[in-house]
Image (cartoon, rainbow, N blue to C red; front, side, top):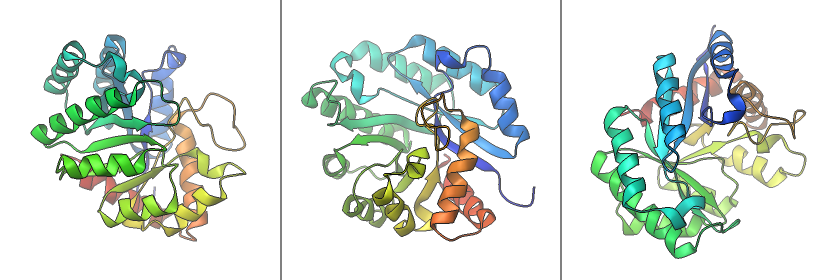
Length: 258
């Protein structure tokens, strides 16, 4: 191919819905001109961690992040942390994630979400790992905690759905915004405006598959292949040639790699 490959910065290939077709999907991505896929391991789930290890072993261009999601924060404790640290010791991970705060669903108490997040920020700091952030209606507080923790390594806000002011602050700090298939949804005009305003050197593409299939597949099971549609939409919004966009995303991705 004449340009840098596609990168799905955030997918959940460990999800049981991919059982039976996981390897075929990965093969199809790399034969379709992908340069990397980043799969997300769930520190609460031993099966997820084991499956992620298998995925990393399957293909040399696979990458992974591992962390304890805010939804499970009521159950965060020494046993979960031990499981996470053991995985970090065994496998080269790109970043710690997805970690952060979810004040939209509030599936865990907010104080527990903050405690679990701060513990993991400390782990990322100790290990000089970037952070991949999950934030829903909590961007200001996430930014505040990153300040309080004096976190210096790279930070990516995955599947960004916050407002334009927080997006501008994130970019001003030198952090990254990763955009998903949501940018193709009919009512996502505000998010498309944020994509347009995000500098190319602060931007990543992702699917969050099996969730968030882009238009016109919305509502179906998503796969990492859909990142091609996401990247094409970003290029269209930014009035940029796809090869320029993919080269920019590849450069951003390299800056995250330890």
